[in-house]
Length: 201
Image 1 (spheres, rainbow, N blue to C red):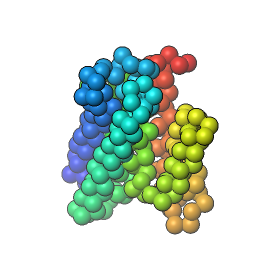
Image 2: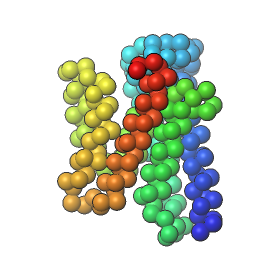
Image 3: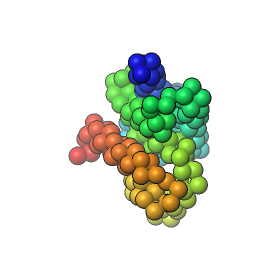
Image 4: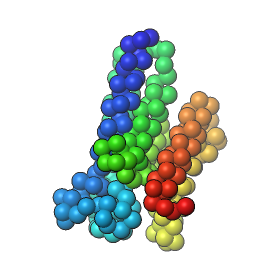
């Protein structure tokens, strides 16, 4: 039990600092030697890159954020199952580790807690559990963005719809729905902190 706790704490710390790595920050710096904090909204996030630096670069950053989170968490899930942490649900652990990546992305200690909103990290986490349904949600979000320019509403929808949708899926357990709902709620809290830093309210 002690070894499991130490493992979980160590991976939480590792996950947080992985989240502190910002592809938006790195790509902005390498693309035009820009300081992302001095461009547009001043956020080190995909939306700022997409709207104020380069649309293709924003898309690349979004794909990288999603891919890094997904691959990292997929490897962890495999290791947890392979090494037989029988007393701790592998799904619960993956949601905890995923939250710490999101927290590191939104509030990075390495950059004075100035991060992004973590939406694509969240997508990478949800892809592990509901890939097909999440794809449909992303298509709907893309429709809202392309035709109605509703970027912020589309983000809210991507965060909130997975736990709501899973309530009606017969192959999704109640535990999974609860974990998704808690993660969505915590995403909301982190984004409130990011918005307060920006003086949005």
